[in-house]
Amino acid sequence: QVQLAESGGGTVQAGDSLRLSCVASGGTFTQYAVGWFRQTPGKEREFLAHVWRSGSSTYVAESVYGRFSISRDNARNTVWLLMNHLEPEDTAVYYCAATDRTGTAAIVKEYDCWGQGTQVTVSS
Image (tube, rainbow, N blue to C red; front, side):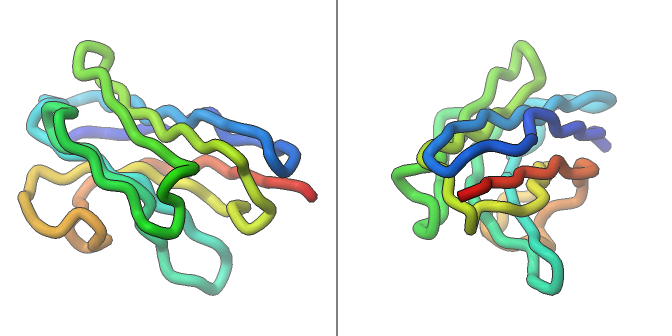
């Protein structure tokens, strides 16, 4: 299985942008679709975006559509989550996850490999 490592989190002001990175190692990256999720204490993990194996197809959750986008570079084994116009409500731990299945992109259980997460804090 592939191992994932997120980076790029931090503390920003409302209205700022951040780009999170997810670097994969130890597997054949092109066999995996990748998703981004976030989680706050006491809440379930929330789906944000998904990119297909080749990068040709992406899907962004309605809750962040227009502000967040996802992309990947298979030559660099990397997937990015670009977040614009950040709001305090975006404060969470952000995770990337990989799956070699072809199921529903937004379902947490479809993903077998998870990173450790990166904290994003947005101050008002």
